[in-house]
Length: 262
Length: 62
Image (cartoon, rainbow over all chains, first blue to last red; front, side, top):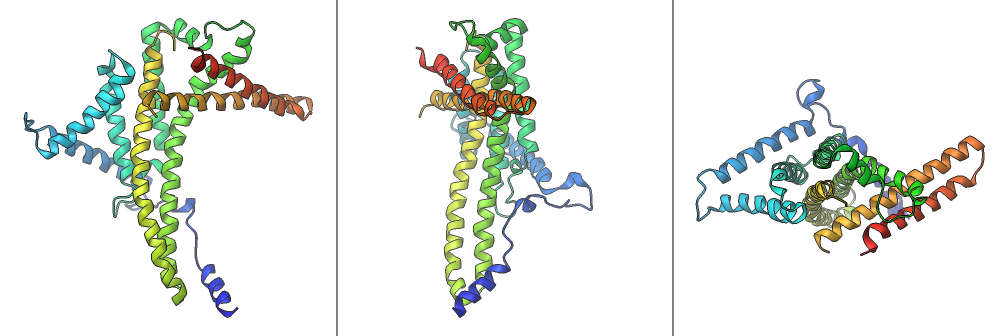
């Protein structure tokens, strides 16, 4: 009974991680543009630039390890994402898709890099901006290719359907193309990064708190840390997958806009 | 699961979501307007049905 009471006492001091852990204060003074996520985004641009400049400088037929790594990522986006989905016009979109993939991937992985340890995409405004880019790109491409009238007609009126059904279906097509697509694109990335970061916080802060408790709790603490480490590997998988999904769906949306009828 | 299937899975999800949101929203608005209760439910069912029909048209026909 007494130990149970002690456990309860120990539990009361713990502040569980919450959305407040995502609102980080400015790093320099009180300039609101120098919060950690913003600085990390800038850092990611620098890291990506340096990596690919180093990887493509002194390009050789027999590649160095760095060149090989850079080329693997590039050819993955170019061949597996762009070419396989978009078709013969794919080359125009490789720069955008490649930038998107590396940018999201780097920022996501920052979530588990020691000391950085924050995925900028867990702030919803970053995925929103990326989704707006994709939204503008695929609609622009479709309108340029087919003309605005035909493009909208293809979206709104699917062939081979009785006329009355359009009352039901046309609003859904419009809602899907103009609202649900950009929204799900950004929210999927945001929610995955947000939940992942929160999950890691729970296990690692929890483990730390247990370590400061009575002896019984100290003994449990390593399990919390072990789980935290396991989840970190799991997070890595999610981070790569989310960068891939975002890029893949962008490529599929572009492909749909280019196709005569989707 | 291939790349194409993955894309299809997400666009099916998108259609179901827009079906529920759009026709559910219309039903909800009618309820607000007329002070009734059942249009929201009807709208949600109609939206889900329309979305499944659309998914079948798009992915199930060939």
